[in-house]
Length: 327
Ligand code: UFG
Image 1 (cartoon, rainbow, N blue to C red):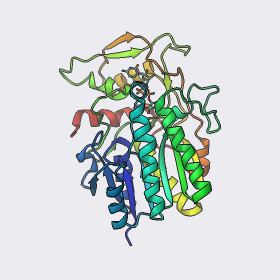
Image 2 (image 1 turned 180 degrees about the horizontal axis):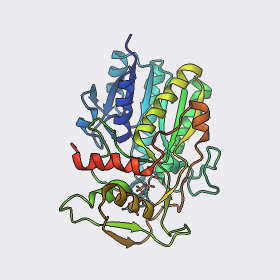
Image 3 (image 1 turned 30 degrees about the vertical axis):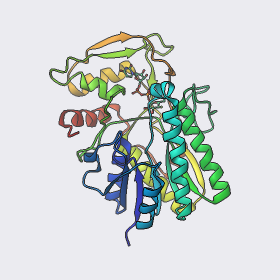
């Protein structure tokens, strides 16, 4: 019997890698994506239904057609800066559309959701590394919208028996090591792809380092970069945990290792043999100096440990993708 799972946002970056991992493990991912951020090519030949999670009628049709065992909810807006300028977009996409999806799930008796959350729900760190008990005090509407959705999931679990896995990603990076999928945002804002893009012949681009006066060893911000294939694997482990035990849990997905912006630039040089042209700029609003996770709960609950523990290997996959990009 086919094990259908719904992957909203499955034509996006993390969603497409998870859909690929699901297919590799014998599940039947049905990708549902409005293509506002996603790409048809990222579905990589898997079944893609173009639609919005706010569209109840379309979701009803889909849930009538397939007996979903679980829903992966990736479809969301995810840029901190944009969320400050346009919070309505974030509360609409990340909260209201999620509520809609949850209603359809409950109507059809689909009880398992794997939800994409973020370290942005924690806000500024009050202790490091940040574990799951760290206070959640988001400092931007993106983090707030995700935290509100987390609260909804917990309440729905208590009231309606919905099983949930809340996965709080730190910085997703890298690309699939063999399939033609990788990171491709229409408007790129992330450090690693921006650094790599400066190295493409004739790009004429430079990377601006956002702040060199942070209270960190080299003055630049430190982040915890986790490979997208590791994220995908963790999603499947989370689903299987819900199948086995039900209930609900929230875990960080991270390597537990921090790298500064300058270290990333050096690592890009090491991997590619090319020097990233850089400019020094002002701090970017809303950037905490250090975000590094405690990742032991995911190991304990899910048996998850990231395979990519070397930043060079992560960057190597991103570079392979950047030079062979199909979309
Ligand atoms: N950076 C630069 N120059 C750039 C781009 C980024 O110096 O051109 C720096 C940023 O200031 C930051 C680091 O590189 O210190 C990483 O920035 P990214 O934009 O790649 O990633 P973020 O840490 O801002 O974003 C991640 C997730 C978000 C999440 C956020 C929480 O992608 O979804 O962490 O802070 F909300």
